[in-house]
Image 1 (tube, rainbow, N blue to C red):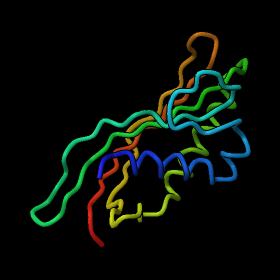
Image 2: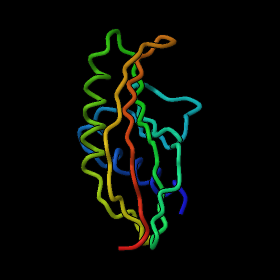
Image 3: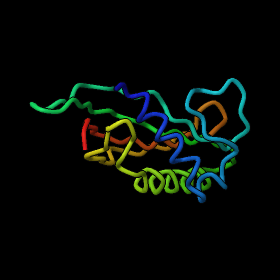
Length: 131
């Protein structure tokens, strides 16, 4: 398995989480060519081997970006909170025998760049095959 399945699962979890899905125009799994703000983007993960003696696995650093064109950062702060709740509510089973065995919050950052607010929430997710 590649991190693609985890990436898809994250995008699906964000899109299925009512507080977030009801507050953004869309959830993207790759950078959009055009998008109306506010929107969410699951950024590409940094992936490393995390296999054990008896199970294949990987560790991924995943980030969810929330983009907003508002005057202040209030809405993007609320969106980052909703994204955190969506990631926390994700099921452990990813399908095809893969499961999340741990997920840890790493950091959150909110910046204003090129006329928009961008909130980034980053996680370390460890995934193993089997079970």
